[in-house]
Length: 402
Image 1: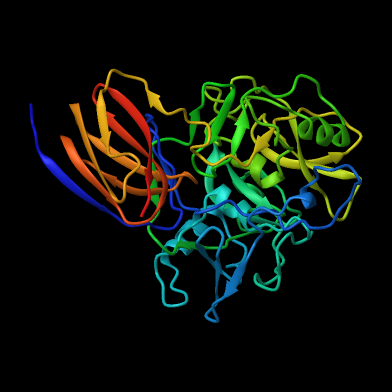
Image 2: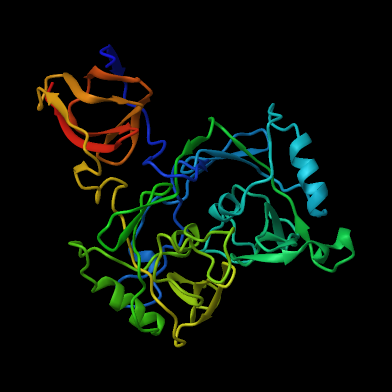
């Protein structure tokens, strides 16, 4: 058996990604999911979008035709590139030089949806930062799963949907589809999977850190009742469930799936239907936004109509992970608690070691290919180390007391 000692010097980095073992890698381009920007109250019932203030949008004008989104970490073109076909939009972004940068690209639909401001309408953008244009829609880089003639686009009203490529004026249609380029300020990270099943009826989204109830509540209800039911839910040991805002709800949509447009491996009880968000349509306040899981469009409906409820909470990505093992790995962590160094010894070769802080952020990842190593962590606190072997996975909480 290989017996080799490797020393890992760990530095604390900003929130980047949350990772657990799975089979389908996902590219993480957004550091955090922005809020909708909605701060006005439209009901006395608690639980609407404005009652929470998670990751409020915050942009910086760079003075060179670009805008930095400090929540997602993406940089955007301030003034969109105008109306054009989807083919030309792709070429436009790939060849654009702006602000001294030439690595622009066409955004995916979740990135594109992230800059919408749902306190505004027509356009649902903060025009202090993004120049208003005649655009009715903006192209994304993603096509409909079963029909490549349709492309996912955001619209000036604040929604997102799948539209025929030929609808735009330049392709012979009657509508104005514009392009807005985006670029990555830092290199995106690849995480092994979008979701993890917590085995207690909940799912953690490893891109956003949100925790979801796997199965929707049974009844379809009005919007006001949806707020009440979500706020009153106690499930899996948590009582801080709520109705998601429209950006949170759209974040679990899987554009690679239809009927329903979610990953049924994780959202086992979701079916084709309409799911309420907590977000009101600001210029028609008797209506609220919802997600339609036929394909994944977001649109709005009178609040007196009845839709389904999928509940969410702000659990850190590791909050529901039980310390332990799904295999026969036997490893010793000594001393634990520690003043900075922990020696780890075991009976199997570790192919990958990942250390998380308690927010679910990765602070270190390595491929030691050994069965004995030393962790050195300079910052006090609790951490979770994940050891991945051909024989399985082991999770262990450690404490540093410097």
